[in-house]
Structures are given as structure tokens and as C-alpha cells.
Length: 478
Image: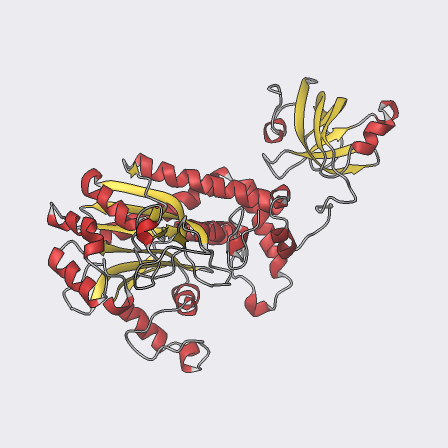
């Protein structure tokens, strides 16, 4: 098996009559003579030229779309258009048959909805091959960015007894008999008899544990799965998704914004450099898709232009208060075109407001800061005005919020006061409060939803198409 050469490498090799071995899956087989073979290393196929007159007919019948082949042959300059090299086959071995009557991925255009139903096979299409190679590069780039800056990669728990967001939308984790759970004298479920001796759930964020690491290691980041039990059937929400959450000691809000902007520019730049072919394919796909839309719904920029635009422009920074003034005076607000009208300070910004600021008003990525404390989490540092917190959200075109972060409240008494106001039990978070009791310091961090990043870089319209096996209400297939 080891002599196999990947198709991506072969397509860049000078043909000199050398013998090569390639393995992959049949995309098409034309005229009993030309096999388009793909192994997932690139969207481009390599053409296998078959001497069908001297090939067993039974073997030719087994070369069907989806079949896995091992081909040994001579690498020659291609006589056809579209590729530089072909392989003149000397031996063909069918490693795995594919019944053409039953194989669902015939060589024709399939809808994304249909491909979601066969997510176990959709990797074999050009679109999903490109998406998941880009996702791979973005993931690697995230690690590279933080490692180059001396951050420590910290694995925070997937099972936790704390709810970092206070959202109450967590999945319960239990090994109790659900048909007959043990109960206390008052009739409530007795979690003391559960596996962990208390109620636990899947994590909604690694932030609180990340802060513990930052209070000793200075700069840490987590990159792992998080879970939200929201009954949300939108193109932007998943029940299981991946989060990048750095936490930095001795950082203030400005440092936090600088780091987040640098991270986004770094990973986008990395993908453009290492996945140019895939992004060009996705750009073309999006341009074709746009042609079927009404003029006002079409993108102003191509995907490639949009990505380059984010690299070339400093993100616009403004306060929530300034954003509210802009939105209040905006045409869609005055003409009641917003679904959620902005009537005054204190409104929780919706995706339509975020996208208006980015796509229509500033026409570039935006960082909003200093939100009202009432609409933000308990751990955010309270500003001196008594009304706002040192929070920041980064808004991207087509996506809305892609990063949410803040300077954390390092003052024990202010943090405890805020927890009391919001009804968050201090005794359950004693360990978190200890970081303020023993050598507390100014610190900050943010969360970047990885799938939203992949959504932006690939130009896809539905978040279910940028994670291999999407989890959402009523769906846990594969």
C-alpha cells in the first residue's frame, strides 16, 4: 500500500514515463476508456486511460461511480484539455465495488438538503471536499497562531457541574435509570446517587475553567466541543459545535480586541495561502448560486474579495451606545423594516442589526464594545459608569457576531455583588471566586465559534454544512 502517490502530488509532477500507483474512488468512467479518479487530496481528478481492448470485460463492468480502485501505470503528458498528466493504466484492481443502481451520489448536481441526508457520503462531493479541507486548515492555523505566541493549549472538561453562561440550556449527563430514578423524600430526583454524586451537564463553554489556567500560566486557549440545548432551527445554530476560547492574564479590553482581530486575520490569511484552489472553487460555486437570486439579494463582493477585504481593513471599533444611535437613525429602523425595532438604549442587538452595521453602514468588520450590563454575563468587568461592562463582540459580514469576549471582573466584591444580583449561587462557584481571592489580576478572554468562522471562509449559507455530522433538534444521525 505504501507506494501510493496522492493525486494532488501527481498532478504537480513532471511526466517522464515513470511508473506510479494511485488509489481513489471513481467519479466517472467514459467510453470504457477514461476513468476520472479522486482520492480527496484535491477536487481535481486524475484521468486514467484504460486499454479497454486488452482489459477483461468483467473488470470493466466493475468500474462504476463510487468504486474504490488501485491503479498502477505510466505517468504521461495529457492529450486532453483540463489536466497536465494522465496515467496509462497497466493494472487496475477493484478494492471495493459500488452498485450503480444503489449508489446515491451519481455524477449530477445534488441539493445541499439531499446531501445532509447522506452526510456519511457527502465528503465525496467537490463542495464538501473543499469545505472540510478548508476546515482542517483553519483548525491547524488556530493552533499555530496561539502556539507561536506562547499560549498553552488547555483541555477543559466536557462534563461539568457549572453553567458558564447561566443559560439553563445545557444537556444533562446521567447514568440514572430514567424509567425509575431514585428520589429524595421531597420527591425530587436524588442526584447524590448519580455517577458524579451531583447533577452534571455537557459544557456550554470552557471559559470559567480556562480562567483558572490563565491565573497560573498567563496565556491559555481551549479548542473543543461545546453544547447548547436550544430548540433552535436556524442556519446559524447547532446543538454541538466547537469553540476557541483564549484567556489571558494581564490583558485589558483593548489587548483582547487586538488579539481577536489578529487571530481572525491570521487564520483567514492561512486558508487563502494553503487552500487557494478550494476557496476559488467555493467562490465560483457562490457566484453561480447568486445568479439565481434577485439583484438586491446578491453579494456585493465575491467570496475571495470578501476574505481579502477583511485582511486589508482594520476592524471598525465603536461602543454599543454609538451603535444604538446609528441604528435608531437608520432607514430600516425609521421605515420599520427591522423585525426588532430599536427604540432606545438597552436593546439587545439582533443579527439583523449587527449585519446592518457591518454590511450597510460601515461596510467592513466591526468591533462593538461597552454593552449594558443587564444584557451581558455576570463575569464581565463593570465599567465606572455603573451601566456598562467591558465587553466586546466582533461582527462579520453575512454572519453577524463571530466573536464574543470581555475583560473579566477581577474585583472579588464587585463579582460577588453581580452574582447576587443575577441569582448565581456563589457556593457552587467557590473555586472560580478563589482566583479573585488569591492573586487576582486584570485578565480578559473571548470565544470564537469555529463553525461560524468556517461558514464565513467557505461562503456557505447553512452552519449544518460546515461540520461533518451536524447535531440539531430532532437530528443525531450518523
